[in-house]
Length: 254
Ligand SMILES: NC(=O)c1ccc[n+]([C@@H]2O[C@H](COP(=O)([O-])OP(=O)(O)OC[C@H]3O[C@@H](n4cnc5c(N)ncnc54)[C@H](O)[C@@H]3O)[C@@H](O)[C@H]2O)c1
Image (tube, rainbow, N blue to C red; front, side, top):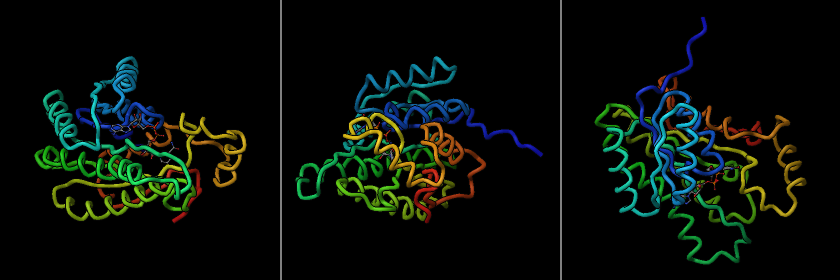
């Protein structure tokens, strides 16, 4: 018998970096399933544009400006979301930065900035949202990892290291919060044709190289990622925790 798609009606989702490339599919899928979406962004204009899209499509979305790498900022954003929506059910840790250069050219400042955004930011946001999840008796924390950790990638040493940290963070946190009904999972995207890719010196060659890595011979879309995130956020995924799930067209198999 066919089951209806899982509804997120009445749930509140926080998506960090939701104004970016994959944020379109992630926020879009969560809102389409009925969740109210708080779009957290360092770039307020991007957050407002994304929230506007959600509302235009008939969903609920509100923009919040803030820096996931700052505890004060995360705590203020979390309080604002809770007072606006009454609580938090779903946290998607998605905001990240990815400067690219040979590892001998990475300085201490860049290393600290990447780890502060891509790993400490995930911790700060989870730590801030967790009390609300405990109060509600359930919660979903979904962390964006990356295929670059699974296969190793040149010229992204700090980024790839942060993504390895995200996998450890996901597994260790899942052990600690399961008794409160909170699940923690990581999704590992392959390479998606977002704005980040446009700066590649040879976009066509890169496009072909990505297709060569994948088993499926089409490029992924942000909705592919969004559909997985919405599933993990739903009641149908209530027995899945501590997992790293690839969404990469069959690139890394682990
Ligand atoms: N796009 C891909 O192909 C791909 C592949 C693998 C993994 N990922 C992961 O998916 C996630 C989203 O990637 P994307 O392609 O949408 O990137 P993106 O750069 O388009 O979006 C990231 C967003 O995060 C925001 N942001 C950056 N620093 C922030 C901070 N300190 N506080 C708040 N917001 C901040 C940026 O303003 C941006 O809008 C990232 O975690 C990335 O590592 C992406």
